[in-house]
Length: 394
Image (cartoon, rainbow, N blue to C red; front, side):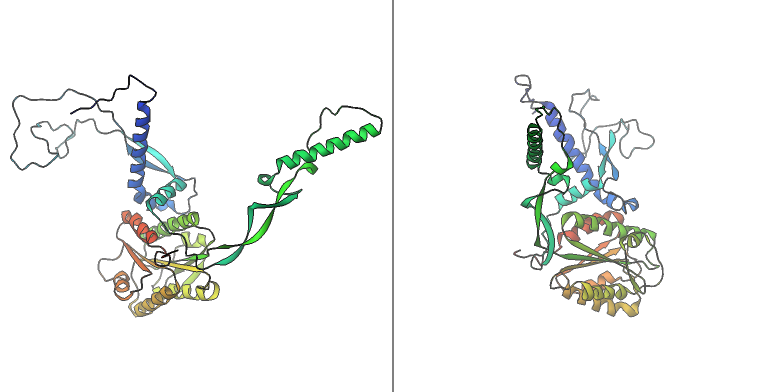
């Protein structure tokens, strides 16, 4: 039964454009969420600023309308094996899926919309209900609290300008000028009396120690010869989106970057995301350097520690036991240890299966990315499990 909405009585209350805009917004958001995986796995995403725009195709919206059909004489009958949605009695092949040759159908209207990195992260936040950092561990950080004002001063930044106090300072100076003129026998009217720099007054804020959650993310990446350019780009995309998201979500985050072949190096952020290397693979070298960093710089008593490792899962066999031992040691001192395996080889058993078989700690999280489109699902698993073991009741 068809239902028609009557918009003639009160056009103000029944504005069709409101419904159209709502449907359009839903369509745009649906298309963005469907294409998040493709965007995140783009090689060009690494190093882009928050204002970089990505294009997303969106299928156009069509209004419902009555049209003339192509009815044929007689009644079409089926064989009894038809499924819901199948067409019975349609003899033309114009544009029909599966027909041979070029079609004659009109097709769908498709246009592109643009989304920035910041807007993309907004959609990631919507899809994930992340817990806060473990607040059982604190470190005192000196911060300025703008809500606790302590008087005025003659210097400061524009957002702290005390306008009322500034006007009062100018007025007092003007009155003083008038008194000086009267005492000297001059009764002149001051027509123009501009502000001076000496009139400016700023709120004074008191610095006070404020407890903030401290966390360090240690990104460890295999850059050996088995990690070809596609795997390295995928690993960097994984780490880049993760780092941008974590920086946006939480305060007071420290990052450490480790790249390794048979030996590991502590590198800066630019080198980590852009420098390419080759050689053999000792997974334990990167993990043991992470352990050394924690011992020297990040005490587990005051830091939330999150090592995350990315590799294709290939390792020199003599190093396997050392790698497993290093993962267990990291799990003991970390809130979470994440392992991401990228485009693994199909010809051998990779470390993903060894780790899942021998690592039984609850804070060990592993994901496998067999193709580019799996990147978003892997990020969701890694982020949604973040800290949940350490935040019960927090």
